[in-house]
Length: 117
Image 1 (cartoon, helix red, strand yellow):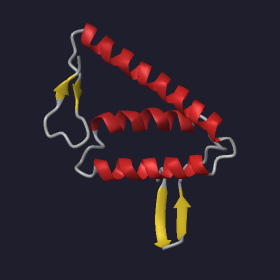
Image 2 (cartoon, one colour; image 1 turned 45 degrees about the horizontal axis):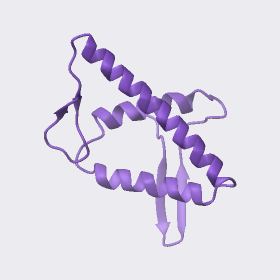
Image 3 (cartoon, helix red, strand yellow; image 1 turned 135 degrees about the vertical axis):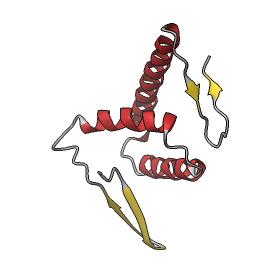
Image 4 (cartoon, one colour; image 1 turned 120 degrees about the vertical axis):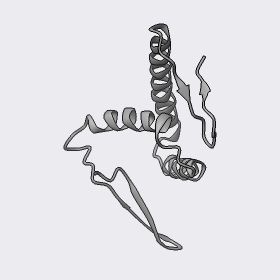
């Protein structure tokens, strides 16, 4: 088991960040992590606390952008990268259905899945 990201609030103004991942030693780990996390978020992440988890992921993202040297460039990069991922996922879903498969989508907090159209 590898720790992707641990953020611990030690006290009111002190946070500690840790990870078992070294992107400098393995630059491809970022791409693999994005793909694997996206798949997990579509399938197994949803265990009842997804709203809190997503809120904290977004809080960390906003904090990162807030201290970014070039916020507009970073927002543009994130927008383009996430669009490419979303397009790829949509294309994969379409291929599965075209080949006779069924794609079931569980949205955050949903107790019943909806069939992907």
